[in-house]
Length: 403
Image (tube, rainbow, N blue to C red; front, side, top):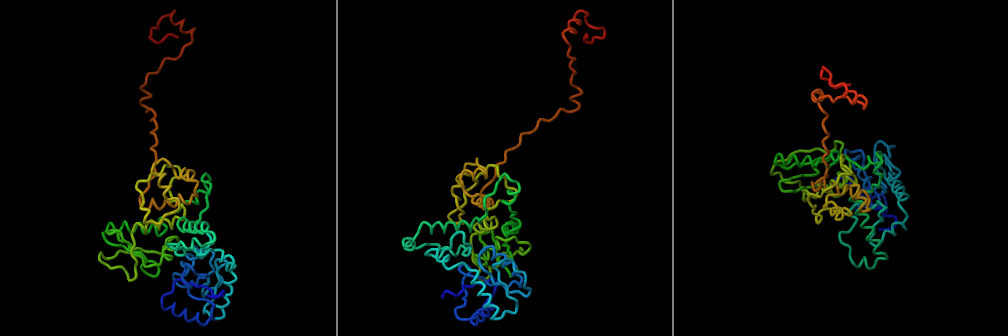
């Protein structure tokens, strides 16, 4: 790849549209750009006029906040941010070439890219390579031994994984009501909540349930055997999980023996629920969670086959004692709030944790009116002179105490 060749990914194209797009790119110019995977691309191309267009645009921008985007539209003038380049339909070669030149001016300098390290991993602050696929599952030891700064490389990998699992929400003043409102989210408004409702419904009817997005079946959930099937790529599924649903997803039941769609990938159901909670949470807490109630770990999550957020083992160890609140957990670990909050959200989704809420002592009931009326009235307090005078005069005829 030459220095000027741009790596371009697409979102939302079927095979037929992609074939036509590749023919179009071949006419733009030699070495101008080439199709690449989403996690390694310099720029993304999105048609915002179809049903999924706005959704794909929002999802891509959330995953890659610093990546330039080229969008095609029939209604120009709605560019959402400075990194988005619009092309008015119909798209011509000259307009597309001009958009590529604009993208080149938006990319960081080559020196910043070279500073990413021997494996091409961007720094944690650079969100351009924001997908988990950009981090190798295994790192060759030779690459680490030959790298100029092996510790820095490992720290970048760790920071990238942390961002993918828990987001980048900064710490807030937990005593400030306004700031505290920003640490909560409503799971019901995300794919996490819809999947939980679908799983409950599937258990009730004894049949699998599917979740559809605008282009068809996205998920099939079958709690009978603890399996889920997804027809979306990891990046597309993560985008679905991170964005509020706002009516874009629907649930439908399947026949008990219905086969999964062609190309669907099977995975454990609890692992999917765990990741959906992490993606929706992004370092926040489910609405209604108390900061000062002790947290008790009811059961240990199987961290050997789940996405493990940072500090998960230490947090779980503290909660196994059942005497620390979320606020105290953050203070004890000295870790970012989002690490603790994201792990709690994922554990809560699978029922691994509970908050211990102490029972309030019952208030003493006030005496009833009847009890007040029946109680004997004590004699009025008398002074010393009146008491002496009473003894001298003796009891009154009416048997009342002497005055």
